[in-house]
Length: 350
Image (tube, rainbow, N blue to C red; front, side, top):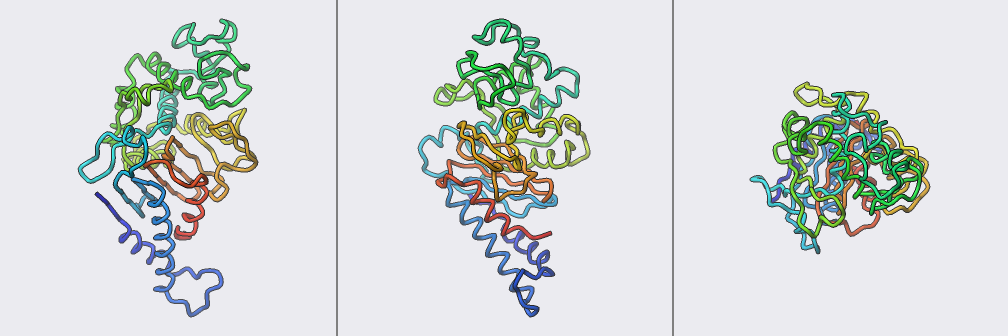
């Protein structure tokens, strides 16, 4: 099922851009012409996104939904493993893969606010010793913040490779330890913590943890966060509102929120389980290093929750913008850059 708000978005854009004269346009350019141009650019964006195996795409700006599209699941190898049915209005319920990390980062921040977690303490202070294959001395040096910033110094088999806090290595197996830290600190299961601290206060009705099938559990992270584009957008809106829910309830403190987006010691494109734009270089999840920001075409203040199969949540404070993308893996290897080139052309310049 397809849900589209493109018509209402185009109407809103017609109103918004009617007073804006594009660079190079003559004084006689009509509002209708500007509107058609804006709609054409938005259509180009949507055609591109749909052609990249996308199932859900949502743009929220200034608190208003500009676009909400839901498309059928593509016939892509392995994609069905990530799908858990659909909602009544046609949104697929998808395991959003590593996008879950950023949700857990917020839960950790809330636990900090509650005085239940101190990220400067060693991981062993919460889950006990012997959780790694490192020596007792080296294990004791691994702090919670080192796990959050992917700088634990461990490999995927929990063996020691480098001193904690000295090297970025995107390590999902070690990341999963944060769930155990949360449960130990809060003395409650993860699904209850998530429900009481995050999803219920925000009204995220379609989001829950699910046990992953064996095909996905082999990465050392056995539970997947299953959700919808709309719920992801609600989460993103809370981030954009500096930790406050739409009804005014504070979910996470500004201090804890800001700490999540501080550039880590070993990778300026990564904070505490969040990806960050605007750095002078980027170390990607595959370990490859490149000069320049994470997404050159996007604003420097963009922060992102990124997951396998190109699951995307972009939050851009300078544009008051939320963008969500779900689906199978995009065919373009530079999907993020290509999306943002089109998106920046399509957005009303207000």
